[in-house]
Image (cartoon, rainbow over all chains, first blue to last red):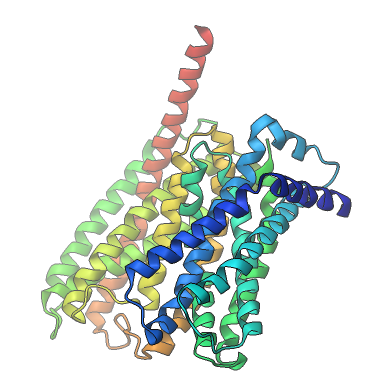
Length: 223
Length: 232
């Protein structure tokens, strides 16, 4: 079980390390988002405090879509999907493996992008860095969990690039609301109690959308 | 597999019952019920609005149930029901989302407000538009049925979460949430409302039967097409 999981994650990481396709695309895209936002809005310091949480989440979600789109469609070339399906283990391991490798790539880009927002907008962050990291981590886990699952679902279609955002965004609405809300509480310099209910909502979302895909993944992967 | 293609007597009976009920409801809505004191004649849209909302939620619930049964039994009948129901649900959610702003404009002087019920309905609409997008994508029917069943389950589970998150979100911004109807509904109005909800339920089953019949016919045509292709 675990060796299969390790093999899938290892394969994805080696592939990414050799090609650097996913992370570079996500980084460039997020950078462009920052540039476009800086033109789109006239940003003073107090306006920044209000809109920056939303911007960070938009950049996170839109750049994740790029990576998620690739994660299953790249297995289509050379019939790699068949190879994955032949692993001597549960098929849900494919889901878990892909989820973890996607999570690693998205978190890596976030480590670069979130400080990038602060630097490029010259914003002096007052809140707690630990809390911000916690919220972003919990939010990303949920988004990548449901995203990986729906990417697997969409990859069956020939227009998967178009289909994925359409099916993923409505389903992830609660997570995005909770994420943006708790991030803006952190930006106002408030403590854990102020947004704890939002964080719990995100955790509930994470649990539900890790368990249900786990149960339903076999149906998605059937040939 | 194709035993339910002929619509038969039940469909006719259901059609006539729906026809009579619709006529009676229209009488009750436009003639029997008094006009609202403050809102005037615009308030009548309320009966269509609430009944469509009920129908839409019911339709999506049917999608959820038939999706689960389809994954367990793999019988094409349930797939056909799920699709027909989803299409009806999207249609009536669209009606809800168009009648709502018309009523809202005259009632609280704004086309739209990001209030829990409105926002959830909008998200619900988007989720089932996505469902239809999976349906129209280019796949073999078994794959399509399987994937849309999975999405039908996920989407329906997501709706209560959306509802609660949006409820929390707004209660912090402006606590006075506009209530639909509320408790101060005149008895005649309440009766008409219940009647229109019942009427719309019959309408749903009538439309569902039609949708199933069309779905079955479509499947049969595809079968014949395949046979012809193989013969050539």
